[in-house]
Length: 368
Picture 1 (tube, rainbow, N blue to C red):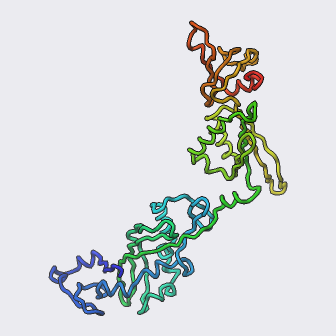
Picture 2 (cartoon, helix red, strand yellow; picture 1 turned 90 degrees about the horizontal axis):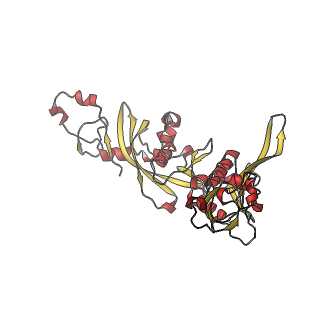
C-alpha cells in the first residue's frame, strides 16, 4: 500500500488557537481510526485507497504504457521524438533519470488541464479531480539489465479537489518504463548505401607484398584505444594496402587524418567529386576523398640514405649516404647509423626524417 499523508500548510498550524486544540483527535470518517484533524478527515490508509496516483503516473501518451526508445546498435536513448535526437546515457544515471521523468505526461506542466477527468476515471470513485501533481523525490529501483525494464520510485504531491475543499496528498509510487528498440538516424545511414560524404583512404605500400606493415598495426591499436575518434566512422573496409573509413561530413574525415598524422609519418591529399547538382536550389552533392600515404619505412628496417637526396632538400642530414637503421616511427622517422665511425661524436649517429623530406627526396629511390 502506498504511503500517504495530509500536507498541512504552515498558515493552518499557526492559525490554531492553543496547543491543546492541536492535540485533539477525531475518528476517521471511513474506518473510525483516531487521527488528528485534517482537510479530508481521513487516515493515511483510507487516503491511499481512495486517491491512488499510480494509475495517473503510469499512463503514457494516449493512455498507453510508458515507453523509452533505445537504439539496438549503438545503445543510445532517444531524447526527443520530434527532432529524433539520440544521446548516450549510462544505466541508472542522473541524466537517464531526468529523461525518464520528462516522458511522464502527468508530471509535465499543464498536463492536468489537458487530460481532464477522462484520464483519472479509473481511480476516482466519488468524482474527485486532481488539480496538480508535483514531484518531491525520485530514485532508481534496481532491475535486471536484460529485462528491458526501468523502474523509478517517485514521491509526489497532488492537490485533490474534494468538494467543497482541496486536499493535498503525498504518495510514494513505483513507475515502470518499457525499453523498446528504435534505430537511430546515424545507424540507419550506416546500413544504407551511398550515404557517406567523405572517405579517408589510408595506404602503406611496402617494397614487397609479404613485408610487415607495422604502420597500419600502430594505427589499428591507436584507434582501438580512442573511442572519440571512432564515433564518427559509419563504415570501414579493409583493402590490399590499408583501410577505407567512411564519414558523413568532411570535418570528421579531416579530424581522423590529423589524428593519424600524429601517430605515423604520412602525406595527406584531399580531392572532391561532384555527384549531382541542383541549379534551382543552388545545392550540390559532393563527395570528398582524403588520401593518407604512410611512409613505407617501419621499425628495424635497414635502409640506405642516398646522398643525392641532399641536393633536393630531402636528405637525412648527417647520415646521408650511409647505411641506417630505423629505430622509431612516430610523426617523424628516427635513424641511427648502422656502422658508426670510431672516435666520432655520438650525436652524429642519429638523425630525424620528417615525412615532407621523405617525399621530397623521391621516396623509394632515395631510401631503399
